[in-house]
Image 1 (cartoon, rainbow, N blue to C red):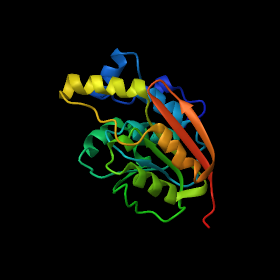
Image 2: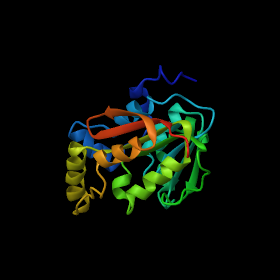
Image 3: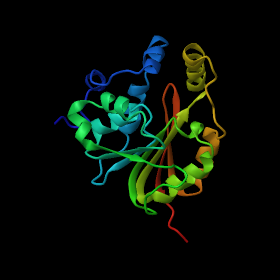
Length: 211
């Protein structure tokens, strides 16, 4: 198996079937799969499974499965599971487990998850601050919490896609990247920012001990 740090992202992308949104973003010169790959590579592999919230169409699931030996991905609904399974490269599909879960009440013990990824999801949640606090709760004190969402360019690109394909508006949610960072800073000693063309992502480490 090819080492994760030597893996060629172009070779990986040949195995991941692009969604309609991916194809439209490509026409504008953007590539979310490549961005996700860049973000995920910032996190070292761990013995415990990494957790992804939320599964969606499987874009991040496919990337994580290629980099980590064990991935748990969860969503409020598993209705997109067939499409998700189709996007995960077959040589990595055995690494992924699926859960139906509510991000406002995550079914994990406090401090039990070594690495958590949540990309382009918080803007879709009804209570993003509560969801974020739940992720902070379950994050291991020596682990990594990776939270990212669209920047201005990303939201504009997704708005264009939604108007073209779905004839409606793309939600920008009720929490800003600045607010996400402020919340993380209350619970972690280290917050690193990763800027990509469509996203701003924060990697939080060194969680404060509980009082």
